[in-house]
Length: 246
Image 1: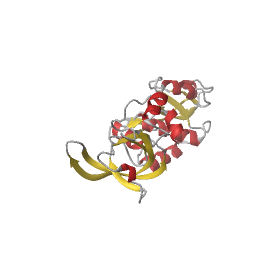
Image 2: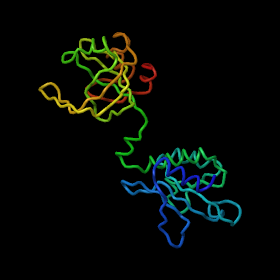
Image 3: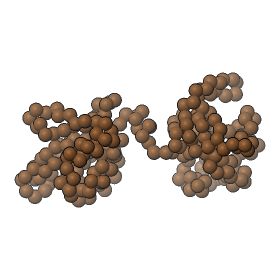
Image 4: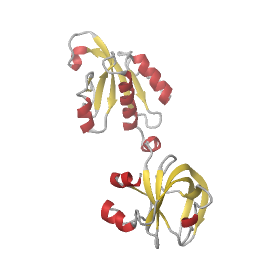
């Protein structure tokens, strides 16, 4: 493991090249986001004794950000990872690039730092798939029979939902229960509709994955067992409900 492997990984995955902002320390390289200019990595060579290691020879390290302080306290227990040199030690770590830390671990920590320093827009784009429960009113759309002849339909796109997410469709009264599990196949489909009942600005394409009997996840069960007291718009679901639905 060496700094060139780091440079190659960042270039290939994030299309970012190193910057060398210090004339005095020409070997120190910074990597930053193109949209918010925040650093997500700093590669430098420092004397071993500066980071508590034996010897006075130089070693390459990479400084990376960790948002979660509890997680940071766990990480610095690993061999070759320590509080950051010359940066905020609460949120940054230094990782040896001499082979002490396996390359896959180094790459995982680079990914973590990239996400920790990304803009809100980029974080949302990069976030892992999420599960939602969304409402469906049978008074305005025949959701009961929507999947009778096909497994893919267009539906109102909820804020925050993106391709790859999972939506559980809660059908309102008189059903008042979760009936379908669907995968989001596409978002941002242009569509505009507005009346006194509903406003639609875009659609998403969803594909049926699973059906539930109306008595399996009725509203009373959602409320008493999972703490869901209303489904008026897209919302995340607790882990206990996710486990039951899946």
